[in-house]
Image 1 (cartoon, rainbow over the protein chains, first blue to last red):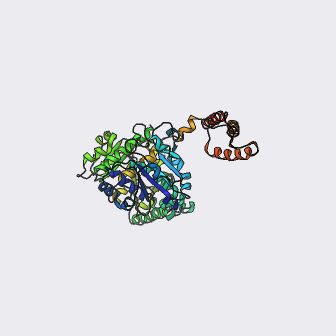
Image 2: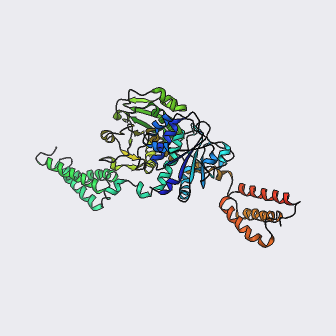
Image 3: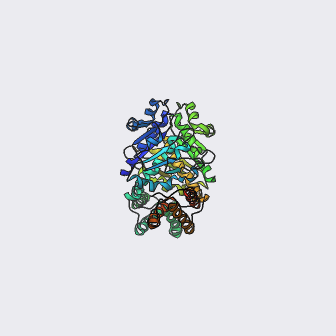
Length: 250
Length: 250
């Protein structure tokens, strides 16, 4: 795990619903984050709901830190990242979250960075945005631009988790498991298919080349690796063998 | 709204919790999607919870289509995209969701594409993955790799929504509101600051150049646009004026 993730502190301001707090804990754990801070949480939070939604992330919930104000919750942080979807004096200077993440992750390699999320109903107040060194936004449909609190958290934390991985960690395991098939292997496979198409009577010598153009096109789109070639050659061999004792189709 | 989004159908298989169904509806609306399909949903779904979590997306919930099996739910779709976090026979051929999205969005411009999400507890079964033309995964912490169902949905739908926007739509409004300041404007601003530092007695002629190196460095990091320059020049003018009637600091 990239150690910068441990410096990312999720700060929820004025949160009201326990289910959201618990869902936030789970999202944090999914994305490799561990420290939750609550600034001025509602006294009406139902902690039972929070525990239920945290599922296997109740450790984060139990270790949460609570502060009377946002200023106190972010006092030790070198960067304070507010999330906002609205326009306005400070908000117009927001940056697309994805574009902001690489620099912020680099900052978190050196010092704590706060990721601040506002109230379920009205987000962050202007005086809270003034505490922020960065304001980021998550693109959303203009018809319904307001993500649920825990959804905003998972979208932003997922960006950080992705950025914390090297490109190799995101590559398809497929590509690692089987190397790309060479042109030679591909030609061998197509030769075995030609033999099989003749043995099964699917085509004859006259039309075989034309037919193989079709299969060549299909396999070029769908079969890329050595493992793919072995599957196709195995079938050709087996079908040719099975057809050996029969008369070709007229 | 990119018309390809309307061709993306969210398909939930064997879903059990109404709250999840509702949260999925909201996430879909946030990301510009509109059609929800349920394949073999649990008979115990609490629709009241679903409505509560859908908030302003109850229209999607009300218009949902229900099918007895996944095969029937995706019958009209040209591409069927399964989501999976586990390894296994078909699962090892999964692709990182972000990498797969551009091609899938292009496919959705021509025909319906199903985005398929499995059960809360055990995801998609192997026979369901066989119906999929693509399998995608969302990177997650190895310590807790299982996202909540609605969180998976918002992460994937958000990728599609982003991809549906041009880069211009994601750019910072800041950059659109005020053009980058020219070098000339920057030099004018720094000249006014030099005057002000002298007028206020913050520095003297001898040390002014050295001091301006410091301010030059600070402003180069933080002040980029014409609007920034106007703010800084306004302050210099005002502070110089306010200092006019006083003796410089010794």
